[in-house]
Image (cartoon, rainbow, N blue to C red; front, side, top):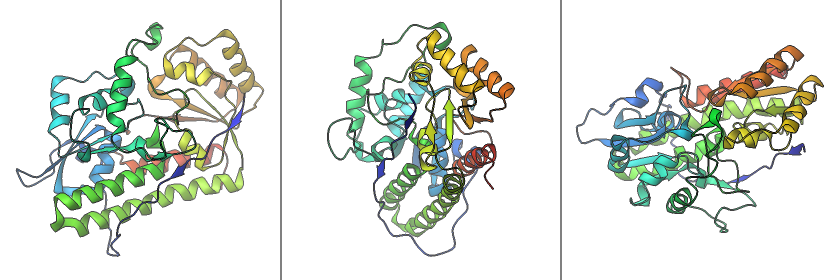
Length: 347
């Protein structure tokens, strides 16, 4: 059934933002190579290049940043970490993970590490539904997630098209694709600024300047989403997977995807004939204003729906789970927001 997306409350980010000239953010290529000029410099390891890019924006040249997953065609859900990946995560001075069942390989690798060095993006989501029943979820959630992964590692193993694509998130918990929540990204940047400042107080002002610039760029993304909300309030969307839920929530859009369709695609389960029929009806009947398509978890069913949307005149917006080549995080999110605005004919 169509429903209004929940609007989650976020934590208020604290910390001094220096009122000096902002330092520009590095591109994607800098997220995957050693950028520190000191042999014993700070090392930051991110589960995906999305968080690697955020790290690059804040740390600049004062840290070596490595992203485990950086292939724009890769599917993070099914990624199997190598021994080198695991060792790299464990050896990091600061590790950044998504959490929430998304990047299980990283959560499991870091379960026995000092949690103070880990930034768990999912822990910045706050709402009425809590994974652990507490009002505040910090980085200790990582160990709980690792236990959850072990308990459910063999679930949803059927489906040849989706082999290996499973989330194992807690039922009823907020959507785990929190990198599409730009407020969460700001919180990750703020937490990283604090950790870097503690490790390297000599460059604290630089980190704070970079955080301020990052926040300004996030403001540009939110400005586009606000225009969508004002000009196309409660615009309707269909989606092949609940990937950009947090982004469209900021634009106050309505999800009219047939119940269970996107969730089945996400979990690697079979989509029922009824769900497919309802999706086809929603598209051909133009019951949605835009069709959101996850290019990194496409199969024959979602491809068929995409072609039908194009044929029926429903605008399609392509989305990815990792950074496109040669783009940083805020540019990527701004591109997504502007593509959404264009599809909805927002001026």
